Length: 111
Image (cartoon, rainbow, N blue to C red; front, top):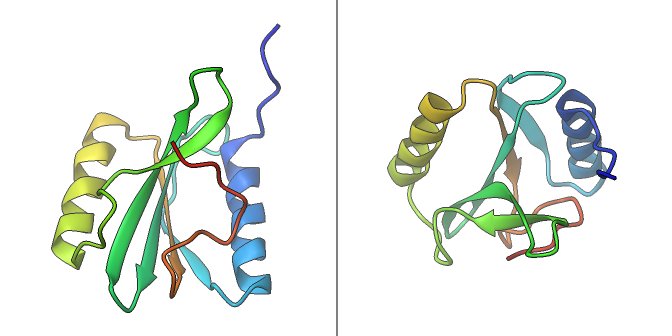
């Protein structure tokens, strides 16, 4: 039996509220499919940016990967990554959060 999944539009609303509540203010940079779109999260900090992409662990649990690598990147590198992913998946959501430590405002398991 497959795991129940939250619709992307609802997940985005929750993530934005968690961000606002924790002082990591967020915005929707690109609206994707409300039911089944994937999500990219751009984290903006003083050292640069990090882009998180949804993934799954080996056991199938939801997780996140630092898609632009472990080190912060500049705006151009983050934009280039997001643009490539949107060409691949036009239903993709893109969120951005202010994040001094480049960590998301929601609970995230990293792989």
